[in-house]
Length: 280
Image (cartoon, rainbow, N blue to C red; front, side):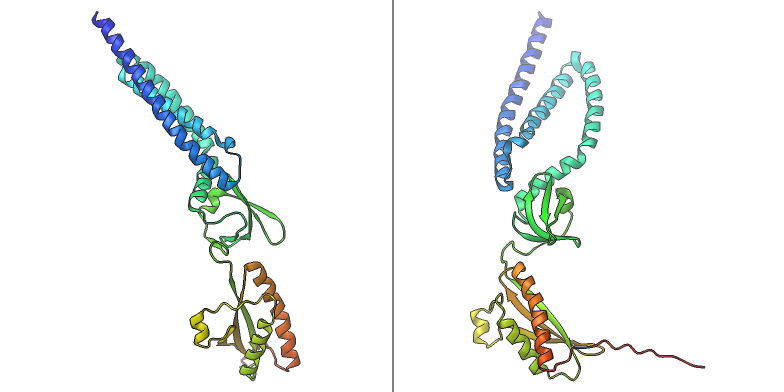
């Protein structure tokens, strides 16, 4: 009778563990499913592609329940130890093989949660890649560079790089227009030409606030930065509504300022190199 009672206790214990595992599994599957749907909506992908996460929850909970059952019942402990040893080796092999892929997936979820950039943003990743974000999925991010090529970067790589986002909050961009003029240049005249050329460009915008306007600050600020070997470096701060317009504005101003300088007989700086020779 004692043996029968013991077996009933063990059976009830097994059923209880399985029921608890089933309840926890339903709760976790619901939570994971909501998270996947939210992430997939932001990433613009089909959420059914990532249902394996919910299946993974069931597998992990079943594995834990099996460990508890086999380790808690003395008659099953030896069998359980043998099975766990084999499962541990298999898990190590699978885990090592899938480490890189899982790292990309986890990084993809972090990109969704913290949102350092979105589709359509212009970003720079590290020192190598710059372009517009075209697609984000749970494995990689696709960037269209300025040569219309697609740069596909694993999410785990992006997670370890510095990201410069030009459009995350405010798309307005301040472009530096740098011109080196000769030492004998009339600086007031050169500055006036730069301001005029900048303000008449179609992409120029006035970014001053009310306080700056009240103080009489110029809409295009031109500063004398430093003295060079053969001239003076001027830098103009010109605003455009976004990086794309800013790039066109900078290229156009480089041309128009040079043409105005030629017409007004203002010389650009020329580098001067002096060769010193010692004779004995």
